[in-house]
Image 1 (cartoon, rainbow, N blue to C red):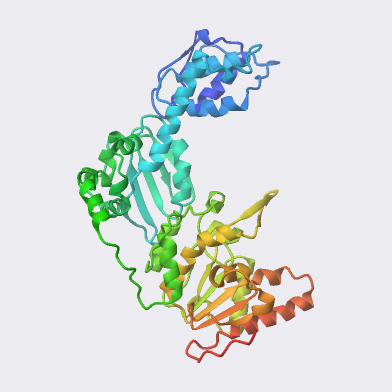
Image 2 (cartoon, one colour):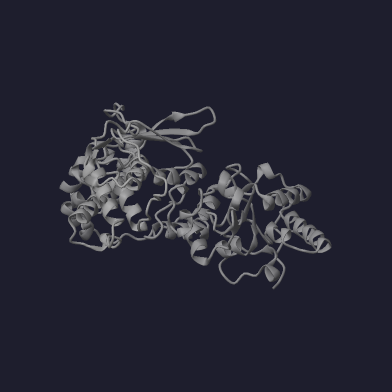
Length: 493
């Protein structure tokens, strides 16, 4: 009998299973000990195997994914189950074992996999961060407490790394802890109990948010409890107001039905703010509301999922510059460097823009720089990530963020670089070759300038032509002039 303790490590079990399989050790000759802890290593085995000439047989790819999920289950018998499946898969005629829906081992493994997947989903939905403070650079630090049924922390953590990449955080659980410092995702052993006492400022924000999205006319209590089981409530700040919201839902719904329609309140503001208000109220884009401060826009942008670009990007890239900048410059989208570092216009095109701004007499540090699309769209070529032009859906999905920045900054001069920026704020049909220069768009800013994107200049093959185009680009930027100058009339079409 071979006694092995893989702890809760799939890698440890896999390495041991490979050796056992290569040594021809059947499942009934292996005793998989109960887990001793999260990071228990492989125990000393009482037998050694001669692996010469005994390569490990291949297994279906579907088994690898199934095994990784089952390995996260809390059942101590999972390791024996997985090795039994592995043994049967590598025997004659066993390669299609996973397709047998009536097989007891397969049924049991599928149930474990389903339970683990459900628990990962619940962790993604019900982790609530508390703000612990900020470091010397102003980077915020957060922590959360969660009590999962299974060993899912490592499987669930990449979701939080991607969604909250701009802040340092820790997720503490009895079954392992995850830590992110902005550059590295690390794991440590679990802790026994919730280390936090009392509430923090974010809990009021959670309750306010939950009240705002609660619709009493669509309340289905059983469905709500199925999606939000009561065992999670003790760690949810909003749980304390659920009973109140349920209790008052019927009277509130009746009041909503009986209330007369309210006239739309319009303030004497620019047209682009009205457009932002309409977009922010649309079901497909709940963020950001009009009047959102610039710093808050950058914080909210991290969680934007309005188009698929976020899935492959490292992070969303907000604008950068003074809150009272007189000049706002809008480009297309972040490039490779911007995506990695989280700042706009720091790549080759941004360096060329900086040189042109200097020649045009524009202080780069005094201007607000941003992009029409906030996530990097790219395609792989070897190890390189090559820029891809964003489509209309991505431009429209990002438009509320750009309008919110425009509302917050309220620049006197707006410079649009390239067709993507033009389409976002001026609408489709604009052509750089025809409309280049001053544009009549007083609803956006006192002076609006449309010109090429500096990346266009980098792609020009002819050096003499590129130099001439650069001078023309500088001349376009000079149209910004002094923000206090009167606005010249745009050229006639």
